[in-house]
Length: 365
Image: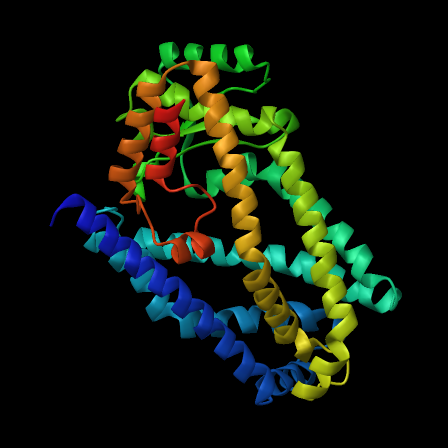
C-alpha cells in the first residue's frame, strides 16, 4: 500500500472509531440513567455498604468497571489491534493490559477526587456551587500538570536523563536563547509501546523539563529535534499555557453554570430527585459530553492558531526552514498522520494544523 494511502486509511478508521465511540458512550450513559440502572446500582450499594461515606467510591468504581467491560472490544481494537495492523507498535498484549489497568486506576483516583469535591460543594453551597467547583477543578488541573512528569509518566515509561550530551547541550542552549528555564532533558522508552514519534515540554516550576521519545531521538537529526523543541518552547514564551488555563477556566465555569441553570429539567426527564443523588452521576457526564461536542471545534480552532504562531516562532528562532519541513515530513510518515484532511474532519478533530498546511506555511516564510 502506498504510504499516503495507508495513512489516509488509518486516519479514516480512527475518525470513524472516534465518532462511533462518542455515540456508543452517550448511548450507554443514556440507557444507564434513563432505564433506572443507575438508581438500582445506587440502591444496591446503599444496602450493602456500612455508610454513605463509601457510596461514591463504590458507585464510581462499579460504573467504571461496567463501562470498561462494555467498551473492551472497541477499546481493544482501537488501541491494540489497529496499531498492530498498521505496524505502529510491537507491544505485547500483557503489557497493553497492564497499561489499561494503570490508566483505569489513575482515572478512578482522579475522578474520585473531582467528584468528591463536586458533591461536597453541591451540599454546602446550593447557590454558588457551580462557581466554587469550577475554581477547584481548574486548581486541581494545575496541580496535576505539575505532577504529570514526576508521578504519571514514570508509571508508563522508563525515565532517564538524556544520555546524548551533545544533544542535551544543544537543547539547553536553545532554552537559554529563548530565555526559558528548564530542569533538564529526559528520554523515555516510547518504542516499547508505539513507534510514533513525540517530544514535549512538560510540568511547571521545579518539574519543568524536556522529554524526548526514543522514537524521535534516534530517528531525527539534531537540527530536526531542535526545531521541534523550539516549537514547544515557543508555546511557553508566547504564554499559550496561561491562555489555555484562562480558556479552560472559562469553559469550566460555563459548563457548570449550564448544569446549574438547566439541571432541574434534565432531572425530571430522567426521573431523578436531585443532582446530589449519586444515581444522577451519569447525567453530569452526559452534560460534559454535550458541552464538549459544542465547544470542541472552537477550542480546536484556538489551538490551531496557537500552534501556527508557535511554528512561526520556531522558524524565526532556529532560522532553519529545511529542518522544520523535513521534521514535519518525518512526523507525518512515522505517525501515519493525515496530511491534508477534509475540512469537516479538520473542524472536529484537529487541534494542530494539518502537516501539509504547516509545511506550506514554512515554505512561505
